[in-house]
Length: 379
Image (cartoon, rainbow, N blue to C red):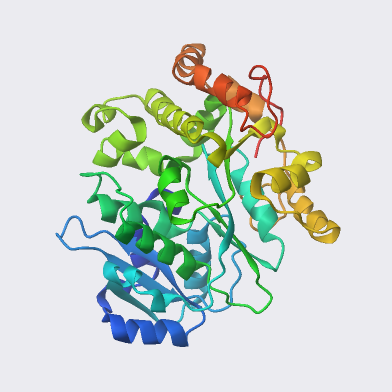
């Protein structure tokens, strides 16, 4: 069974909330419902590329439930299983041009981009431990739906036009609306391949502190092969050409190791191109003793001692266990060993130089002369 996070967001949400796409509201009625319902947020975007439409935003009332799950889609899934989703409906994508959908939004305080399986979930969940934080961990509408809509399923570039930037900004702010009085700060952790849209996201939110987390690609690939990802779902589809920099038709015949290596090389190279706009963080440096420094220099955030101690508790647990019962154990060596020598060499040829350049970059929070061997940590 394919993981929910690996599938297109609108398909998953339509399965979780039956009929949501059929309850279509005009802009005036939708704006009134959104403003009157504090828990009403965008939960997916249907790009309608197969039907020739212009895109729909799917909205649902999630009440005051805090974002504590390791991915946004699991918040929706958990509430749907409990029968705790309130009103839901669809609107035209054009509603994202209307600032009236913004009801007490919290301006984000930082963006997290990443290569995948590199400590980003740990970082996001640590931040989410504070009740004062709204942390969108890979928000479903920000995963595929928004980008597929503005590119018409990657038939064109995601142009940073005023209209597209406004739609993106309003989408983010509609998701970070304040649903509890105590909420005061928001962070957005994007899905890994949204790294290729870092420049777009930062054009919509100028001066936003941003961090790119990365890891030895062989370990990332081993994890993806074990658990799958949205990048694997895209293989052999037009989106794969954008992700990998290869002809999308050719990706269908590639073995997954080569395909993923090309995708991850694209992410690493794009992060290098961002210069000082985005701070860099190697997975081996994500340690409890470094965390305060990571937050301060990477996200310009300096929590108090009590709040920092609360966030550091997350380091004791497996980040993808929302019950916080599974103790963390390292599996980095196991992941490296699971990839044959020939494949490790192939990944090094595609990604190795980029890794070394990221480690040497002045934008790196912990610059080193050369890439170190992978840490025994794994999250």
